[in-house]
Length: 299
Image 1 (cartoon, rainbow, N blue to C red):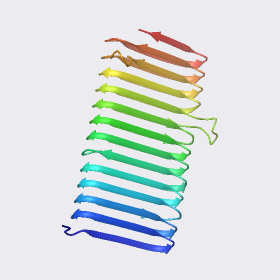
Image 2: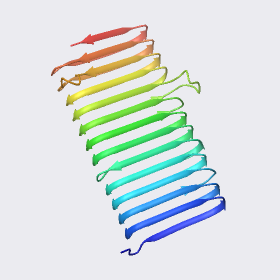
Image 3: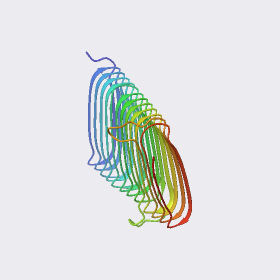
Image 4: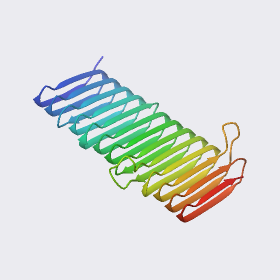
């Protein structure tokens, strides 16, 4: 039985397509299309769900699918030839995608369970972002400004937080978190439009209460990899310059690492740091300023 289900399609321009399906009570779906050749599909099954899609420009595609109760999906697209997919199954989930100022951007959000929050903001062209969350009360936020940036956030557990900020061009970030109460933050700022100036951050955390922060700015061809297994690990890395590499491993897949801390700061060119800590209670700090430096630590 459907009660107070509301559909709000609005089309201005040519060659638009909008499909809206709802099953349940007190659901609301809204679609606004201007320009040419926009495509929107909105499906909701449950109660008190709200889906909004706004498209301006040309050749955009948006899909919004929600199953459960009190879910909210918002998609805003301007420019040309961008696509957005939002899928939520559970209750009280929030998903937001904003794409503007360019062409050929892609964004996907998939959330299962309850009280998850996902947000993607893309300004530029050729950007891609994916957010996949399974569990309770997880937060994923990706902000990309520039061209040809890529970010991927995967969180499986409860109360995890993953944040990505990428400015300029050709940045790559991947965050994977398995467990509860984990925190990961990645920030990258490139220097030019060349694909040779490519920053990359990869973070993987398996366990609880882990924390890692990676920041790369004013540099080219930087690579930061942080792997943490176990509980209460902290890793913070900062890189400024060109061709820097920082690799931090605390623990292994077969050996948990508890209460380890590692801090690394690099300011210069062609620096390299590799830190591996296995067992409990380890502490390390590194600071490099200059060119051609290298630090290798095993504890």
